Amino acid sequence: MHALLRQYGTTLLKPGLQLFGLTPVALQRAITERLFTQVLKPLLIEGELDFMASACVEVHITDINQRWYFQVVQQQIQVHRHGPAQVCFSGDLESLLLMASQAVDPDTLFFQRKLSISGDTELGLALKNLLDSLELTQLPVYVRTPLAHYASAYQSLR
Image: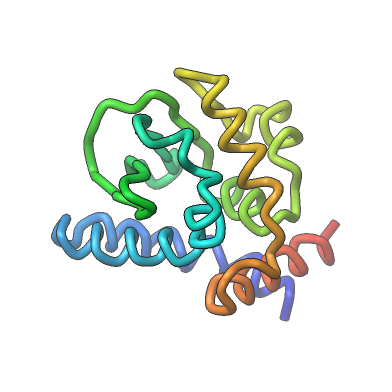
């Protein structure tokens, strides 16, 4: 089961995210903003993301060529499909999933050149460290469960 999850997890997600990238921008924004605001709610409430108030963060999923731009505005995550970013995180889907599921340390991915940070690296490192400090148990169950399964599948194949 775990091997299948890992093998097909990114295989199924890639076309899903590519199709998502073709949906109307308003729908993409509504779904993505709601998801990330909910996931990051504890950090938003505690003001831990206030340092991003005037910043825009680009996330580029390289193997499917999808880009999203994130900003924090009044304790909400705003998502755009274009924009000037102060910092960019880029990596393939599997590497970003490994980082999000905490199966692999972001620094390991960076040194393996599977994750890159460009632009304002000080801002990028502050954000990476903050997100890395999040415990999976703090995330909503609908996010935590698939990430935990993905991490478990990855660990079982090592």
